[in-house]
Amino acid sequence: MTTTTTAGRHTRRGRIVRALAALLTGSAVLAACGGGGATSEDGRQKVTFLNILPLESLSYSAEMIADTKGFFAARGLDVTFEATQGSAPAIQTVLAGSALITRVGDIETMIAAGKRGAPLVNVGEVIHRGTIRMISTKQKPVTRAADFRGKLVGTPSEGGTSSITLDLVAGSAGIKPDEVRRQVVGLSPGVFDLLKAGRVDSYIVSLDTAVLLQQTNPDAVVYDPNDDISAGAQLYATSAAQAQDPQKQDQLRRYLAAISDAVAFISEDKKNGYAETMRLISSKYQVPSLGNPAVAKASLDGYVASYNAGDAPIGTSPQRWDAAYKEVSGIGLVDPGMDPSRWVDNRFAPANP
Image (cartoon, rainbow, N blue to C red; front, side, top):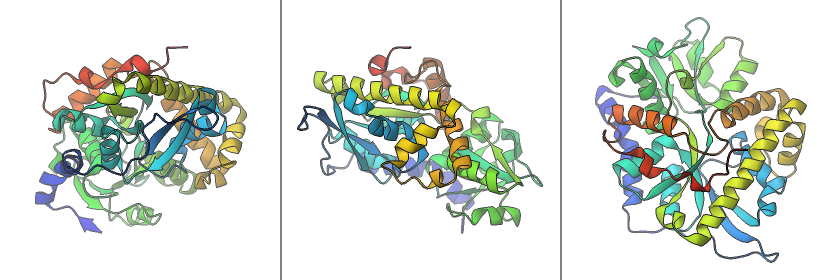
């Protein structure tokens, strides 16, 4: 494990900015994945979606259902999924026009557009509430933002979105970033043992992992950052150039309409215990969490709640977006006083049902 020193804490938030800067200002363009323009043999338009994590995760349930249920095909799209090593290369590839669309966090989007001036546009928000969770134990519970003062928190890596989220949570309670210590603990299942041994006070996980821990460890306590901050949503992003191209505009509308169909399908399937959702996904994709139906159902409950937490299924709430910007600028990741609405274009999101 690596403990973050005082000097390291001063620079950790800059790491994600520098990573984005290196990719956004570099001269090399990533290999073309096919941003759109070609058609398949049956006449559907080919587009590429960039997933920043392995697709075989319930985080991408909407994409997998849009594929296996035929919502993409019904909208005249032939969608190819391409994995990238995180959000920075996904953003660069979209900006280069080598892919139509990706799904990234609002924090990364604001840093790219606000700090680096990247022509990146949020065209639709699907996960309206963040999916990062923080784990502690019943013996030493961390259940609110103020509880993080003076704590040692395990992070998946040094810097990055998880650590920034922790900064935002602490800031919501008036806690300075240096008042919360960090230690890199990775993502292995054994991290909970470090927690029980008292070597960390809390650690950061995904929604799926939090659900699994609740199912398998009675002592696990889950803190949801959404209780205290607005930032953390996941959105669909494209380049300003593609958002202004009539053909790409049509493809964006079709893509987001198919995702809206998928979100509605999954939400409706909740009353059936997500039986059809899990069957369809399993027919093509190997998603580990589907091996435990109880965990899968609880995870899907979390995603459905997040799908339906916004003003519209796919659109971005101006109020939530502005609140997230104020939080992100409040800890110095972007300059204050900017107009974050310039980075959002809701024209492509389906109208409210």
